[in-house]
Length: 227
Image 1: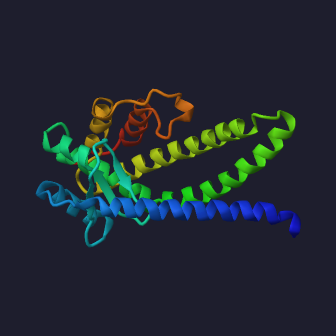
Image 2: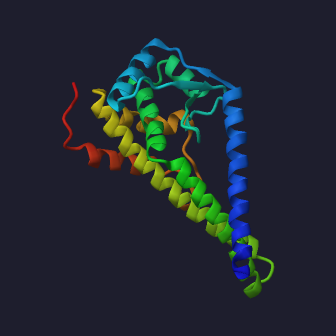
């Protein structure tokens, strides 16, 4: 039993680090956000709620400028002020914003936050083991190599989450009578709205936008037009 103690301690440390991060994130989000009250978006949220069989879908505006949507670990949905301003200026349609909300609801429904907690805890332990093993073979670079490997794994898992949330969002939009077309059209605008990432694709937490569009087009090719 004692030989497993270091591993158990590493797993426990990872879990505690995750919980601390979650609490800090929720405190920040709730402190700097207000409930969305836009009539057009609320009407679309009612359609999403009806399709889900829930009383309502609540969305909060997070007061930061980067263009983004967020699903908090406790299931709350956030749209950044920067994204909302793009909508208010006409650069993004109400239906496209509904696509963002549906995507974030996908993260919640599919349990991605819980999955990331498990992954983070395991990766924390894996990183410590890798540092110990690699440092014995090549002293001085164990931490760097371990960091790179865990980042690669984390990015790959995160990209998979995005594809799953896209598919869930498309299905929800179709069921709500909105259709997946706005979701695809928003992805086409995303580079201009938020700026495309320039880092290596294998280190990016989101898939290439073109790949996401292609996946959604394959998924929805035979779906009826809701109009």
